[in-house]
Each structure stands twice: as C-alpha cells, then as structure tokens.
Image 1 (cartoon, one colour):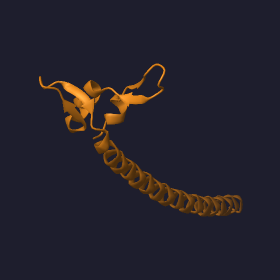
Image 2: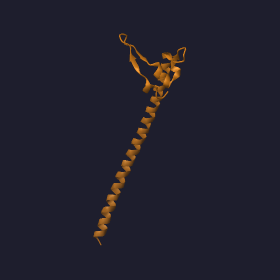
Image 3: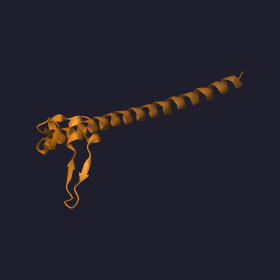
Image 4: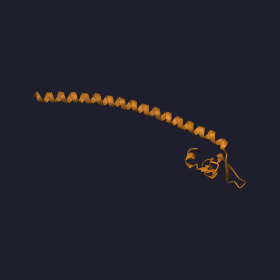
Length: 107
C-alpha cells in the first residue's frame, strides 16, 4: 500500500463540492480499490475498502512514530551520558596537565 497517498488525485466536482479519487490513478497503486468496467478498465472507486486500508496505514505510521520516539529518547540519554563522560575526562586532563606543569617547573 506504500505510495498510494502520493499518487491520489483529489478532484472537485463543480457545484457539488464533493471530493473523490481518480480510479485510474488509484488502480496503478492498488487495483483492489477500484471496480473495472466491462472492458477491464478502472471505472469507479471501491470506497468501502478505502477506510480500512487507510486505518492500517495510520496504524503503521503510529508504530513508526513510537519507534522513532523511543530511538530519540535512547539517543538523547546516550548523548547525555557521553557529555558527562567528556566533562569528567576534560576535568581529569586539566588536572593532569596542571600536575605535569608543576612537575616540570620543579625540576
């Protein structure tokens, strides 16, 4: 189903202000969402199938967003830990440099 929403064309019927999908465009992505005419060409949308498919896609996106939030949280925690380690190492390096400077001066 990936890519369906990228290829959907919304049309406005003059006067009625009804939105619809172009069956020919949708058929290129998911032929199950259209009914064909006697010649086998896309004729009309099967809108009753659209809502469950869209719900499934929304659920996939929600899972993806939750996974990305979890990853972001883990990465943030890791960065904070690394920042603490860097601060500790910087402090230790500063102490060693001071100690080394004192040692060299005392010679």
